Length: 119
Image (tube, rainbow, N blue to C red; front, top):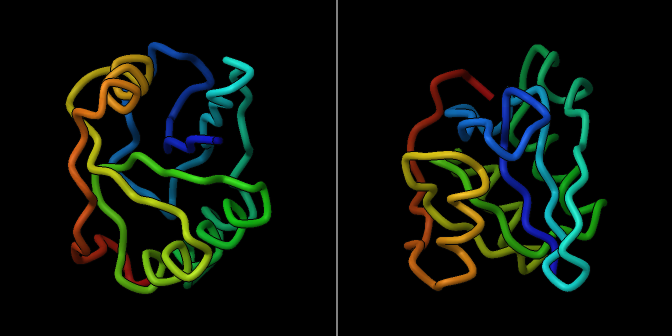
């Protein structure tokens, strides 16, 4: 099981980035191995359009099983759902606190919300 969280900085104490598709990095947490890695999202985040969809596909390609984010556009969420990736609403706090909430089954399902950008 691999959890992906959009972050601004490559640290467990980073806040969750409010933008899914435009996030510069994703923290990837392998639950089984308890290992953290970071995924550079430059290709999608700097695109002129479709950043959310591109980001979703990148996460699919990296075998992510779950995402934690404050919001996600409808098209990106459709890509994630088609790949059986579960999406959860992030909480205020660090990425570490969000992982702990996920592991304690305290996060709600992420609902489709309008994007801040035209993706």
